[in-house]
Structures are given as structure tokens and as C-alpha cells.
Image (cartoon, rainbow, N blue to C red; front, side):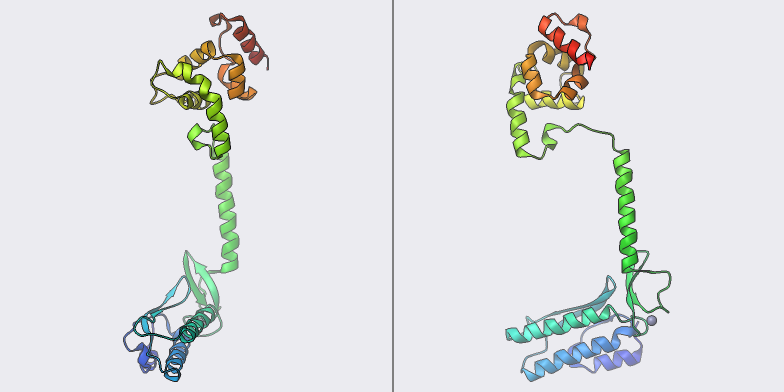
Amino acid sequence: MLNSENREKLKELEIFKKVAFEFKMGWADLVYELGKDIQELCELTNCELPMIQQIKEKMGTLRFYYNTLNSPYPQIVEKSIRALVDKAVLKSANICEECVRFGELRVDKGYWFVSCDEHKRNSITAEEWKELDKKQREALENEQINKKPYKPLKFEEIKSPILKRKIMEKVACFEAICWDYEIRAVDVYNILRTKDDTDFPISYDVLRKKVLKYISVDNLKKVFTDEQLIEIFSDTSLRTIRNPEKKDFIKELKKV
Ligand SMILES: [Zn+2]
């Protein structure tokens, strides 16, 4: 990391007496200047030195953790220390951490660092990374969209409260069926929409027959769209239906 010369120079500053240096020699001068500036500021304003907790590289740039809890600082001094630190952090994004020459933020296999051309290894720039990341995300999204088969939403998965309330009002007609089984009106809706009857005391097939028998065509048309009605009822055998109105209804669905 740092050589002994860097370390000795930094330790000359009172402010750095107790802190460890977790960065490479390219930033030694930058951190030294920062420490010296804060120290001078505190001397000029008769303030104590802030506590320096950690000085390190993180996500490629400098992190300088300190606190001013050890004594009361005038607000302008606090602000000035913050400004000095922010300026140094900003500068670190253009100083090669290895050798102090001009550098830029780069990334290599998820590891971020600031480096000059000589020390860049196989890394790419932040801009190249953003471009690559965007492409990878898009590819992943496309893959997911292509993979995901269309799945009807259960009542609980619907986000819009208005839509939920509307469905609640409409499915109230299913209460007539619920009495025989321990299910709610929205369960009837869910099972018919998703064909998923696991965990319910009635199967999808029996349920749709019951619904067809006990719920009026008008109500069914209120609850479901034409596509949904076709999906649920169009393969019902006409021989099993006695009610002439329901028979016509199924015939209509079969035609589409
Ligand atoms: Zn370098």
C-alpha cells in the first residue's frame, strides 16, 4: 500500500496520529493536503482537531470518515471541513491510486478503482461499464419476458384499489356458491381466473360447473370479459346444461 516515506510524512500531521491508511501511494499527497488543510483551518479558528475514523478507498474513490463530536464546532467550521473533504473525494476520481498520474474511474470484474493508462489492466471505463450493464439488463429482461408464460392475476395481486373494489362488488354474486364450501367469493374468482385449485376444497372443474349452474348469465358477463368467459366456459359440454338461456350462452362462446 503506502511506502514508509509516505507513511512518515502523513504521520507528521497531528490529525493523522491515530488513524490507519487504507489506500495506495498515488493518493498520499492528496490525503496529506487534506489533513494539512483541516489542521490549519482548526488552528486558525481555535478549534480542536476532528476525530478521523477511517481513510480508505471504496468503490474506486477516496472515503474520509471523521466526526466532530469531540468538541463544539462553529457551523462555518463544520461546513468548511465538509467542503475540504468533498473536494478531495472528487479529486481522487482523477488520480491514479498506484502512481499519482491522471487517472479515471474504471472497473475490472466488479472491482472499481481509479487508474492511469499504465495501471488500468483489463478494466473498462465507467461509461463503457454503464453501456455494458444496460445491454446486459436489457438482455436479461428480454429473456425473462420471453420465458414468462402469460399468467392471470389473482385478486390479491391486483394493485389498483379501484379495480379491486370493482371486482369485489362484482364477485359478490358468487356468495351463493361459497356457502357449501369454506371459500370466499374472491376465491371463486381466483380459481376460475388462474385454474389453480390447490388448497381449496373444490376443484376448478366442479367449481365452473357450479358457477354456470347457479350464477346468472348477466352476472357472469359483469364479472368476466368475453375472452375470460371463453377461456373458462367454452369447452363445457352442451349436453350437461339444462337451462335454455345457459345453453345459448355457451353456444355463443363456442362460436367465437
Ligand atoms: Zn498509474
